[in-house]
Amino acid sequence: MSDAGTLGWYAVWTRSRAEKSVRDQLIRRGVEVFLPTVIQWSRWKDRRKQVEWPLFPGYCFVNIDPRHKLPVISCDGVVHIVSVDGKAAEIPEEQITAIRQLVDSTLALDPCPFIEEGDPVRVVAGPRSGVKGRLLRKGTDARLVVSVELIGRAVSVQVHAADVRAL
Image: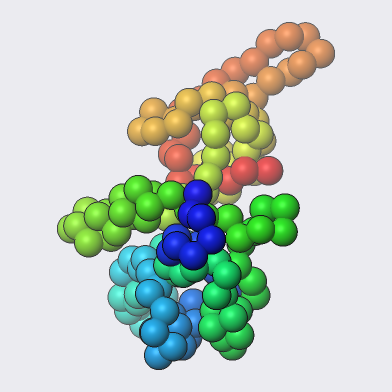
């Protein structure tokens, strides 16, 4: 964790779809900002187009001294700096570095929900849409377990990780 007077990375929560505007304002104010983005296909009624989207919608990252956060929180579109117990929560440098490396690579990135093994989930796409259960295993061989607790039995099925959302 940063001591007062040193720079650290912090997450800035923005209004919906205000990430790029906040990034541009922060750059103009001389604040180091990181807004990881991915190119994805977007579909409208009449066309499809590749569009740059934030990797983490609603968030961008700033490298600041937490004592001098006024230039950040006074930007139009900023909700607040993510905090824990009223104190700005610092993000470890290695996490920002890892995300930068992935974004700068030619790898295909897909934002995914933060789900842990054992979490209750609902399938939101595909032939199992609507089914609720627990995520048994993550990764390419993700498994969903549906239990009948009264009789102490369960069944598991393979699911695509992108098709489940945390409950």
